[in-house]
Image (cartoon, rainbow, N blue to C red; front, top):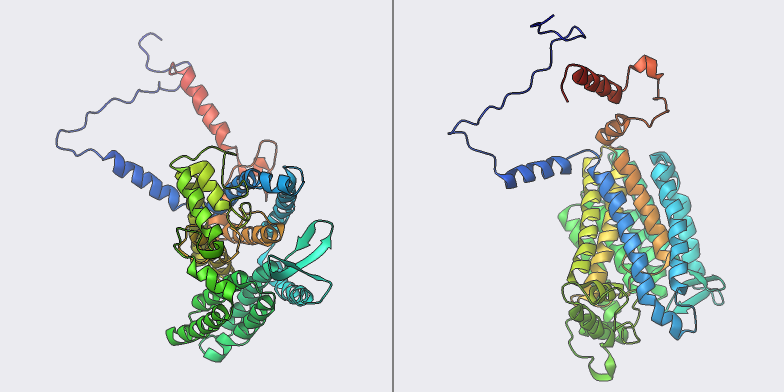
Length: 455
């Protein structure tokens, strides 16, 4: 009817929202404050740690593949190999590591705990096998490799890091369940003796860099277990004393220690690698010389695609590239600490803390050596440098963090509330039992608005 306020559908027309001016005395919200509030809300979401670990690790791996291809071409050509030789091997290792990451991210916590003892036994066996003449292979003066045939080699000490994390986390979780960690004997035994056995096997081959990472994992587990200060300081003092003795008795390690902050190669070019790493970073500037345009990788910088790949990154991508890599590792470390701090499961807390300590400590030691702030320890940049033996266990450890991040109660609830894809049924009932989807309801609302004359 004319003048009627009802539409053909029998519903009153949708009224437009009237603009209400803000009273003169009402303060407006600062845009910076509004942006900070939104960022804080996004940061506190249940799936933040999950996305940071997954996205950050994948970005590091992809950028690492690009830089391995760029930094290794000259080395491969000097060895009469194809320019993409090292890149293809790293890509194969990344593909295998991706399968390990996916498998670890889908495994239940019980299966992770079940792998602890077999992995430790296998790592100890392989690390002892390295010292058998004819089986172990020496690389750059360190006998820590086993030849697998052809150009493939494996470094068992890299798997020893993962073994110590899983076994130590399972051990400390069992002791915590039995309320035994209040006694210092149960806190130290058998964790410290087993860790020292692994350190001894590593040091037989002369690889002190890996021994430092393993020591960091040990101290991280003790810290998470709540070791008293005097006990923690005591173990740290013993480890420091052993480290000083090992450095003092090795001229090569003393020379590396003397190269901290060096700006000249020195007598006999003893600081050649450290100085040229600084040269590479200094010549990169703000945005670098361009991908593939590094000068130092043309025979001037040793180990450009392994231990000193961060220097080539700084030369080709500049300060922006190095800060991006640093930010990705910082985000990965924060996410790991967040997972360890929010869980109720003691095994998850120890394992997540151990993996985070391992990755962050190794990244700090590698970057510190390239920047001239720490002695050159010969450890690769995790997930970034060339080396399948280092990449595979590290990607499996990242899969552990992803599984733990998904297993948080709030994250589990957030994942369960996700809308399924079109054509799939929800778990626990049919679509008719659970009611219409949200997008269906929104479509009906839009139809009603269009029928009433609103657009």
